[in-house]
Length: 411
Image 1 (cartoon, helix red, strand yellow):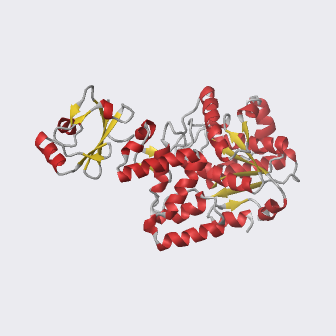
Image 2 (spheres, one colour; image 1 turned 180 degrees about the vertical axis):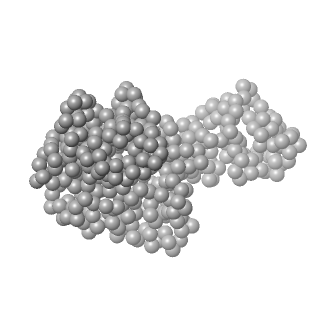
Image 3 (cartoon, one colour; image 1 turned 180 degrees about the horizontal axis):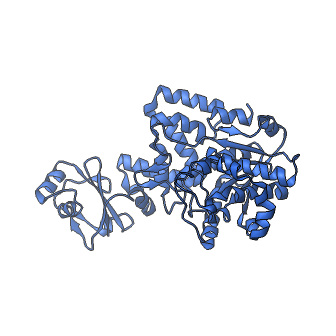
């Protein structure tokens, strides 16, 4: 199975600019490029597919170039947008670019990283209009989906010019790096084909280039991929802890699991088919979700961070809270209500402070009925004192009432 056939099987192929692309990829090792938009200082899981598809090319011996849009990011891509983007400052664009390039390099270690600000900034307005702008027909540009969809609500000249400016990337990389292919989501089709046109018109009609796109991702229920009730799932562990990242994939709904297995894991096609078969026989065992969560957590973070996330999950399930480190407590209980105490406190009073009981009478009932745990251990002593010296690393005590009610005490 060649690369194009595999991408089709994984539902990762939307369109190609040349039907001969499959044969070309088998006969030649291509230099290709994929972009990164520096609108934030971290990528989120919605961006992952770009770099996972790129990894499939890389694993077949092709050579990736990561283009940080330091220049185009100052303009704003209208693709997939219903309104104008917030314009970045140059300083912020470059700062964000440095941050996300580190994240991508974990997935694409062989990638050459470049920033299109380096060549776009060399053009003055007259040279740009005379040497580049003359090759673009306005009627042709208006009919691009990324522009057409915005005409009714209005689009600024700044964003209208985006496809011309991004075309410079493909032309520059073709000329300087022998880069013959651009890949991207289906919303990038107009930008990719505009780049190929510019290459032909400026470098010669014999110059052969290729473009490939994959479908935009959505969940089976039609909601936006990569979003949760609490917001985006980021690759930066300071924004989204590794445990939260791991849990996002572990909680993949069964109806999405097969699709995600195909798109997000790097098992062979045959291995993936066997896993799908096992999963569909016993979906309650969540084999697919566990494999997806493992591969992506290791790839984006590390094996050690993955093992820590698994340890947190097991500890929360079993109640073995004391086995966790301070950092794991912080990650695992990030969204749990937290409050501070300055001195040792009776458990009855603490349950009220933690809002795990509404009165002393109710708190005593919970304790007597064996419904209260302190750091994973059941407590039925009404005189039990919660002490700093017994806290995890002398910092935190985890209170639990019933099966799901938690509170974190900070000493």
